[in-house]
Each structure stands twice: as structure tokens, then as C-alpha cells.
Amino acid sequence: MGAVGSFERGTANTEDGRNYKTIYSIGDNIKVLEPKNPKKGIKLPEESHTPNRIYATFYKDGNDVKAIAKYGADGKKLYEIHTIDHKWLGSHYHVWKDGKPIEVHSLTPEMKSLLDIVRNFKS
Image 1 (cartoon, rainbow, N blue to C red):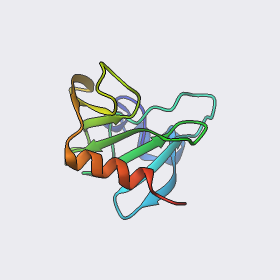
Image 2: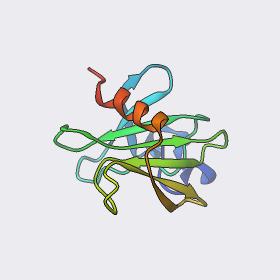
Image 3: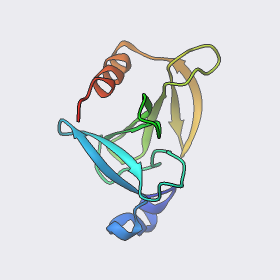
């Protein structure tokens, strides 16, 4: 759970090299993260060490989910869901390619269900 490129460089292989910590697990594959440094912004990692992982973050005040990202078999981000309005889409997702968002779309029914699962999680 490191920063951009840390997976490939190996800096996220140890706990000291990671910028995030898991604060909750939802089932086996959804991990709720927060930055280790609370002064840093809440941004999801670009890559995951666990294939097909889902990471989520909440706004600092805890009032809602900020983002959810799905990672592929290679650990690279496939898409990221955002709950803040963007281009009048309301909650939406960005397709990721080569470490960058390339497209924005309305949520699919599967993504709406995932968002509901994370929103309704009780710690």
C-alpha cells in the first residue's frame, strides 16, 4: 500500500515503506485505509500488493465514503469510485490506465452495490 511506483521499486515491501494503514476489513477483500500521516490528504494507493484487492477511504470527518478503488490481478488500479459530484454525474468512477485516470462514467449497478456495502459497514 505504497505510493506511486513503490510497488515496482519494492519500497512498499515493508511496513516502514507504506504510506497507509488498514483500519477496517470488510469481508476478505475490502480494506478501509487511512494515511499513516494524518496531515496528508486521503488518497488511495496507485498499486496493491494483493491481486484483485478493493481499497476504500472515508472523508476525514467520517461522514461518507470518499473513494473506492479496484485493483487488477497485476496489482494496478482498474478504476476508482468517487462520491463527490463530477460533471453532474453525482457519484461516479474513473477508469485508470498507466497510473492515471483516463475516463469518467456513471456508476454501474455493481459499483453502486459496492458503494452501498462500504457505506453501510459498521465498525
